[in-house]
Image 1 (cartoon, rainbow, N blue to C red):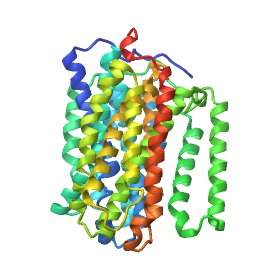
Image 2: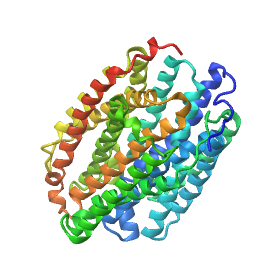
Image 3: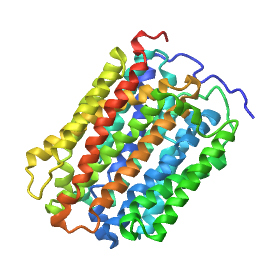
Image 4: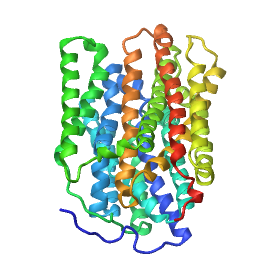
Length: 469
């Protein structure tokens, strides 16, 4: 049953209050992005601490991203129905408790389960944060700038994860990458209670439980096949069963969604080229980022013997590029529309991938740093126009769902990137990691080229500066 809820934003906030709300949401989003990548650089240390190999450690990353991706859309709908601030606060609490569980994990299985619980909490933060920001910014140009800042913080958190993780591991051990969340969660809970106003979506929707279950199964099975394929064999009977299950659950999801009056995901939206390419672009951006980060970690630590701190520091150019270019990208979207920043994103990402397609055991450090800088710049330019294009493709009253679909696409890309990168170098002799990773850098290049396609499709989006709020 559909019911009417209070308006999403009952009163216009002052400029200071609007940007304070953005800052609070950005702080929480920083945690979500940070925990997507912070453990990458620590995987070798976690493996040594828990006595497990690289392939099993992929689940430490992907348990978080798969659950996060699978629940994002439902969390956005829950936030529109029960109140964004309430769901946001619940997400912070769950995320904090799960982080403590990760910090004390005695075994790999316990750690993977705790990471999955972290994903549950994070799913209540990501789409809700964007919905709160969108609803707090009634002016289209200001909203575009705010999305640029939001994307900058999220991008910085993703790119800074390895640097932060490397420093924490060097000083306090791998468990500290989870302990660090506790004080931030406490501060965020206080700030949300003080500054973030209550808001709801304009419509309440039924929860699509069959669609939700099938979505999680489809994502989990798909990533599972990618991770386990190199071990069990791509044409082995278990792999063939896995393919069949992925197809069956995906088909079941489409069938259920087409028959629902209020589906979890309105598949009709994907008939709009603008929206569909924006979502696929988000997947491509995060495949490129996560392939780059994991290959960097395994190549530098295993093949070249660098420490976790040194490998993390190598990604500083990536973090710098993302941090500087994301706000710039938001301003460009606000003034000129999404096409130009997407062209820049595609060009820089493609150039970064091409730098490393011939990676060798003794590739120069300057070339590595240049490649990471180019990829970081591409990542920084990509997020704001993709987010703006995707949100513009949906009704404003469905801001929670709009943010959820875009965020889910990012996490799907993260999970796929980790699975592919891990599969390329797992069980490879350290001396052969450089050669084995070359297809990964070709994939990064291909993702950059695809962003040029997204830029072309985005031309249909009018510049926010020319729209009437």
